[in-house]
Image (tube, rainbow, N blue to C red):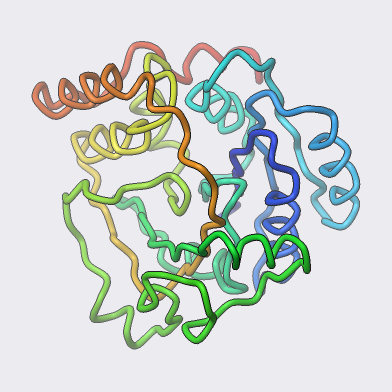
Length: 265
Protein backbone atom coordinates (compact mmCIF):
# COMPACT_ATOMS: atom_id res chain seq x y z
CA UNK A 1 0.00 0.00 0.00
CA UNK A 2 1.35 3.42 -1.00
CA UNK A 3 0.32 6.43 1.08
CA UNK A 4 -0.08 10.06 0.07
CA UNK A 5 -0.11 12.74 2.76
CA UNK A 6 -2.14 15.74 1.57
CA UNK A 7 -1.78 19.01 3.51
CA UNK A 8 -4.21 21.88 2.87
CA UNK A 9 -2.73 25.33 3.46
CA UNK A 10 -3.24 29.02 2.86
CA UNK A 11 -0.84 31.84 3.77
CA UNK A 12 0.39 30.70 7.17
CA UNK A 13 3.97 29.53 6.54
CA UNK A 14 4.89 29.76 10.25
CA UNK A 15 2.31 27.09 11.05
CA UNK A 16 3.14 25.01 7.98
CA UNK A 17 6.78 24.88 9.08
CA UNK A 18 5.77 23.26 12.38
CA UNK A 19 3.66 20.75 10.44
CA UNK A 20 6.62 19.86 8.24
CA UNK A 21 8.92 19.55 11.26
CA UNK A 22 6.47 17.10 12.82
CA UNK A 23 6.40 15.06 9.60
CA UNK A 24 10.19 14.79 9.70
CA UNK A 25 9.83 13.07 13.10
CA UNK A 26 7.48 10.33 11.86
CA UNK A 27 8.23 6.71 12.71
CA UNK A 28 6.73 5.75 9.34
CA UNK A 29 6.93 8.15 6.41
CA UNK A 30 4.26 8.57 3.74
CA UNK A 31 5.32 7.57 0.23
CA UNK A 32 4.70 11.11 -0.93
CA UNK A 33 3.74 14.53 0.43
CA UNK A 34 1.47 16.90 -1.43
CA UNK A 35 0.71 20.43 -0.28
CA UNK A 36 -2.68 21.67 -1.48
CA UNK A 37 -2.13 25.42 -1.58
CA UNK A 38 -5.18 27.64 -2.03
CA UNK A 39 -3.29 30.67 -3.33
CA UNK A 40 -0.55 31.41 -0.78
CA UNK A 41 2.15 34.01 -1.41
CA UNK A 42 5.81 33.53 -2.36
CA UNK A 43 6.83 33.04 1.28
CA UNK A 44 5.00 29.70 1.45
CA UNK A 45 6.57 28.59 -1.84
CA UNK A 46 10.07 29.34 -0.53
CA UNK A 47 9.37 27.45 2.70
CA UNK A 48 8.22 24.38 0.78
CA UNK A 49 11.28 24.50 -1.49
CA UNK A 50 13.54 24.67 1.58
CA UNK A 51 11.91 21.66 3.24
CA UNK A 52 11.42 19.60 0.10
CA UNK A 53 15.08 18.56 0.00
CA UNK A 54 14.75 17.13 3.53
CA UNK A 55 12.32 14.44 2.39
CA UNK A 56 13.34 11.46 0.29
CA UNK A 57 10.17 11.83 -1.78
CA UNK A 58 10.39 15.62 -1.92
CA UNK A 59 7.21 17.70 -1.65
CA UNK A 60 4.74 18.13 -4.48
CA UNK A 61 3.45 21.70 -4.21
CA UNK A 62 0.07 22.11 -5.94
CA UNK A 63 -0.88 25.78 -6.08
CA UNK A 64 -3.90 27.59 -7.44
CA UNK A 65 -4.55 31.31 -7.86
CA UNK A 66 -6.12 33.02 -4.86
CA UNK A 67 -9.80 33.36 -5.75
CA UNK A 68 -11.30 33.28 -2.29
CA UNK A 69 -11.77 30.19 -0.11
CA UNK A 70 -11.61 27.34 -2.66
CA UNK A 71 -10.44 24.46 -0.48
CA UNK A 72 -12.59 21.85 -2.22
CA UNK A 73 -11.02 22.52 -5.62
CA UNK A 74 -7.39 22.56 -4.44
CA UNK A 75 -7.93 19.32 -2.51
CA UNK A 76 -9.46 17.66 -5.58
CA UNK A 77 -6.59 18.87 -7.76
CA UNK A 78 -4.03 17.57 -5.28
CA UNK A 79 -5.66 14.19 -4.70
CA UNK A 80 -6.04 13.76 -8.47
CA UNK A 81 -2.24 14.06 -8.69
CA UNK A 82 -1.60 11.70 -5.76
CA UNK A 83 0.10 8.42 -6.62
CA UNK A 84 -0.84 6.67 -3.37
CA UNK A 85 -3.58 4.08 -2.93
CA UNK A 86 -4.39 5.58 0.46
CA UNK A 87 -4.84 9.28 1.23
CA UNK A 88 -4.10 10.79 4.63
CA UNK A 89 -5.39 14.35 4.85
CA UNK A 90 -4.45 17.07 7.34
CA UNK A 91 -4.46 20.86 7.44
CA UNK A 92 -1.50 23.21 7.44
CA UNK A 93 -2.07 24.08 11.10
CA UNK A 94 -1.95 20.53 12.46
CA UNK A 95 1.11 19.26 14.33
CA UNK A 96 1.11 15.47 14.18
CA UNK A 97 2.27 12.93 16.75
CA UNK A 98 5.34 10.96 15.68
CA UNK A 99 3.25 7.80 15.09
CA UNK A 100 0.47 9.64 13.23
CA UNK A 101 1.16 8.17 9.78
CA UNK A 102 1.88 4.73 11.25
CA UNK A 103 -1.46 4.75 13.10
CA UNK A 104 -3.47 5.65 10.01
CA UNK A 105 -1.67 3.02 7.94
CA UNK A 106 -2.16 0.28 10.52
CA UNK A 107 -5.87 1.06 10.90
CA UNK A 108 -6.55 1.35 7.16
CA UNK A 109 -9.04 -1.27 6.03
CA UNK A 110 -11.07 -1.81 2.89
CA UNK A 111 -14.67 -0.69 3.30
CA UNK A 112 -13.76 1.99 5.86
CA UNK A 113 -12.57 5.57 6.10
CA UNK A 114 -11.03 7.09 9.23
CA UNK A 115 -11.80 10.26 11.14
CA UNK A 116 -9.41 11.05 13.96
CA UNK A 117 -9.55 13.52 16.83
CA UNK A 118 -7.59 16.69 17.53
CA UNK A 119 -6.34 18.65 20.52
CA UNK A 120 -6.61 22.44 20.55
CA UNK A 121 -3.68 24.63 21.55
CA UNK A 122 -4.63 27.98 23.03
CA UNK A 123 -3.37 31.31 21.69
CA UNK A 124 -0.37 31.72 24.00
CA UNK A 125 0.78 28.10 23.55
CA UNK A 126 0.47 28.47 19.79
CA UNK A 127 2.55 31.67 19.77
CA UNK A 128 5.20 30.01 21.93
CA UNK A 129 5.26 26.94 19.66
CA UNK A 130 5.78 29.09 16.57
CA UNK A 131 8.43 31.27 18.21
CA UNK A 132 10.44 28.30 19.55
CA UNK A 133 9.63 25.64 16.92
CA UNK A 134 7.92 23.42 19.51
CA UNK A 135 6.31 20.29 18.07
CA UNK A 136 6.29 17.95 21.07
CA UNK A 137 3.16 17.99 23.21
CA UNK A 138 1.55 15.57 25.63
CA UNK A 139 -1.39 15.16 28.00
CA UNK A 140 0.62 17.20 30.55
CA UNK A 141 1.33 20.15 28.24
CA UNK A 142 -0.06 23.52 29.35
CA UNK A 143 -2.51 25.39 27.16
CA UNK A 144 -4.30 22.45 25.56
CA UNK A 145 -7.92 21.33 25.57
CA UNK A 146 -9.46 17.89 25.01
CA UNK A 147 -6.63 16.34 27.02
CA UNK A 148 -7.96 12.80 26.70
CA UNK A 149 -7.44 13.02 22.96
CA UNK A 150 -3.70 13.56 23.52
CA UNK A 151 -3.26 10.12 25.08
CA UNK A 152 -1.54 7.80 22.63
CA UNK A 153 -2.42 4.26 23.63
CA UNK A 154 -3.32 1.18 21.60
CA UNK A 155 -5.07 -0.24 24.67
CA UNK A 156 -7.22 2.87 25.25
CA UNK A 157 -7.93 3.18 21.55
CA UNK A 158 -9.38 -0.31 21.50
CA UNK A 159 -12.09 0.77 23.93
CA UNK A 160 -12.61 4.42 22.92
CA UNK A 161 -12.63 4.12 19.11
CA UNK A 162 -15.81 3.04 17.40
CA UNK A 163 -17.54 2.49 14.08
CA UNK A 164 -20.46 4.85 13.60
CA UNK A 165 -22.41 7.10 11.25
CA UNK A 166 -22.35 10.10 13.58
CA UNK A 167 -21.32 13.17 11.59
CA UNK A 168 -20.65 15.38 14.62
CA UNK A 169 -17.10 16.66 14.66
CA UNK A 170 -16.13 15.24 11.27
CA UNK A 171 -13.12 17.24 10.13
CA UNK A 172 -10.70 17.00 7.22
CA UNK A 173 -7.74 17.89 9.44
CA UNK A 174 -7.38 14.25 10.58
CA UNK A 175 -8.91 12.14 7.86
CA UNK A 176 -7.93 9.16 5.71
CA UNK A 177 -9.52 7.12 2.95
CA UNK A 178 -8.80 4.93 -0.06
CA UNK A 179 -8.30 7.00 -3.19
CA UNK A 180 -10.53 4.71 -5.23
CA UNK A 181 -13.40 5.30 -2.78
CA UNK A 182 -12.86 9.05 -3.10
CA UNK A 183 -12.85 8.88 -6.91
CA UNK A 184 -15.98 6.72 -6.91
CA UNK A 185 -18.06 9.50 -5.31
CA UNK A 186 -16.34 12.23 -7.39
CA UNK A 187 -14.35 13.67 -4.49
CA UNK A 188 -15.08 16.95 -2.78
CA UNK A 189 -18.12 18.91 -3.92
CA UNK A 190 -16.78 22.11 -5.48
CA UNK A 191 -20.18 23.77 -5.24
CA UNK A 192 -19.18 24.20 -1.60
CA UNK A 193 -17.24 27.47 -1.58
CA UNK A 194 -15.99 29.14 1.57
CA UNK A 195 -15.38 27.74 5.04
CA UNK A 196 -17.25 24.80 6.48
CA UNK A 197 -18.99 21.47 6.02
CA UNK A 198 -17.14 20.25 2.91
CA UNK A 199 -15.55 17.44 4.93
CA UNK A 200 -18.87 16.50 6.55
CA UNK A 201 -20.64 16.41 3.17
CA UNK A 202 -17.88 14.18 1.79
CA UNK A 203 -18.30 11.84 4.77
CA UNK A 204 -22.06 11.65 4.14
CA UNK A 205 -21.50 10.54 0.57
CA UNK A 206 -18.79 8.05 1.57
CA UNK A 207 -21.24 6.48 4.03
CA UNK A 208 -24.06 6.57 1.46
CA UNK A 209 -21.77 4.72 -0.96
CA UNK A 210 -21.56 1.82 1.50
CA UNK A 211 -18.47 2.64 3.55
CA UNK A 212 -18.22 2.64 7.32
CA UNK A 213 -16.55 5.36 9.38
CA UNK A 214 -13.97 4.47 12.02
CA UNK A 215 -13.88 7.20 14.66
CA UNK A 216 -10.31 6.85 15.94
CA UNK A 217 -9.40 7.83 19.50
CA UNK A 218 -6.04 7.69 21.31
CA UNK A 219 -4.22 7.00 18.05
CA UNK A 220 -3.30 9.36 15.17
CA UNK A 221 -2.98 12.15 17.72
CA UNK A 222 -2.66 15.70 16.40
CA UNK A 223 -2.56 19.24 17.76
CA UNK A 224 -4.43 22.17 16.24
CA UNK A 225 -2.72 25.56 16.31
CA UNK A 226 -4.94 28.40 17.45
CA UNK A 227 -6.13 30.96 14.89
CA UNK A 228 -9.03 33.27 14.26
CA UNK A 229 -12.11 31.57 12.81
CA UNK A 230 -12.47 31.97 9.05
CA UNK A 231 -15.34 33.95 7.58
CA UNK A 232 -18.59 31.95 7.55
CA UNK A 233 -20.02 33.92 4.64
CA UNK A 234 -20.84 30.85 2.53
CA UNK A 235 -21.85 28.58 5.38
CA UNK A 236 -25.61 28.76 4.76
CA UNK A 237 -25.17 27.53 1.18
CA UNK A 238 -22.82 24.77 2.30
CA UNK A 239 -25.27 23.70 4.99
CA UNK A 240 -28.01 23.47 2.34
CA UNK A 241 -25.81 21.26 0.13
CA UNK A 242 -25.04 19.06 3.13
CA UNK A 243 -28.74 18.79 4.02
CA UNK A 244 -29.58 17.66 0.47
CA UNK A 245 -26.83 15.03 0.53
CA UNK A 246 -28.33 13.62 3.74
CA UNK A 247 -31.98 13.87 2.66
CA UNK A 248 -31.50 12.43 -0.84
CA UNK A 249 -28.83 9.92 0.24
CA UNK A 250 -26.49 11.24 -2.40
CA UNK A 251 -23.32 9.35 -3.23
CA UNK A 252 -21.91 11.30 -6.16
CA UNK A 253 -21.56 15.05 -6.60
CA UNK A 254 -21.70 16.65 -10.05
CA UNK A 255 -18.93 19.20 -9.58
CA UNK A 256 -16.00 17.15 -8.33
CA UNK A 257 -12.63 15.56 -9.04
CA UNK A 258 -13.51 13.98 -12.39
CA UNK A 259 -12.75 17.20 -14.28
CA UNK A 260 -9.06 16.80 -13.38
CA UNK A 261 -8.70 13.11 -14.32
CA UNK A 262 -7.64 13.62 -17.93
CA UNK A 263 -5.18 16.38 -17.00
CA UNK A 264 -3.12 13.98 -14.90
CA UNK A 265 -2.76 11.12 -17.35
